[in-house]
Image (cartoon, rainbow, N blue to C red):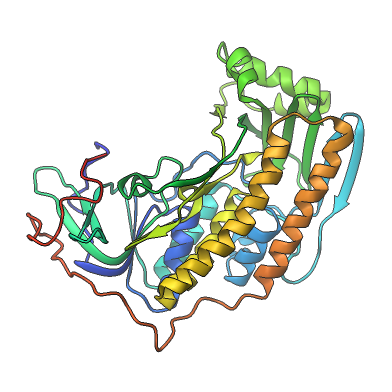
Length: 425
């Protein structure tokens, strides 16, 4: 099915929603779930099939595990066969430092669920809360009123005119190449300085395995136990080195990096089936985008991206989903300003520390200190999250005025502009 088409069988049930979420992965499904739990009428749309896989190294850090526990989703993930990680070992050249992980009722350890498991559980929780979630549906555009306020989305079906669905707010949770960010011309507030490439595959692992992170001058790797008795084994290099050495074949170049990091790690990776497929991400410099404007907001990688080398992307997605939900439920400009301020403080700290590691300009002697600085950021984030109330709808919250467009409207009314940017993406 073409990307700009919507299945005739997968049409929204209503013409207007309190919130429409474009993207139903970690950030989008979590935002939909939290808003629906608070009583809002929510539509989430994703262009990929329900439960499909996506690029991810799976490892969750403490803030993400804490969020999932607070939302009642940690136990379902463990019941789905996600292994509990109880220690993490850092390999700085030939030196090993093993750290036992916190063991308490809210943080029994860490987990690294496959996205086929994590995203599905988040979507199921959103649906259980009352959100409407449609998969294999693509958004083609946004539409706005004459004052420039986003009023909804436009989707297209084969053989029929555009279908419009209006909302009080449209949230872009649609990743690095966010259509919503493009349509609203979201400004980049900060750009990262570096990018790293990551090539990974899966190999069988013995039960009880834990996280392992490997570093030698100019290269890095990771061993991440996940679902189905497998470990995600990652080779990480600067993007420039990836362009030089990996273009002729990912498999041999990846094994060369793993062998240089640790012969034992390379041996573990060699246990994968010969026809196992590798996944590669060439790397993109991090960025922080303007996260909201009239009638729209961005969450997850659509609003803030940092290199995967620190395994903090899902933590960022879940944290910002909750804080955005709180701002939407408050319904005031002041609440959105506070949300952005709080997001930017932690996002800048994470981008700083991630770039310090992903730049590969370190020596093994100072890399440990960079990791300790990152750990301090994580601890502060966990403390802040633990003290936050769950998002709830205020009885006095005022909602912005809304244009309620019929879902099957063929032509835009005179007072609505064709789209937000004036040009179709």
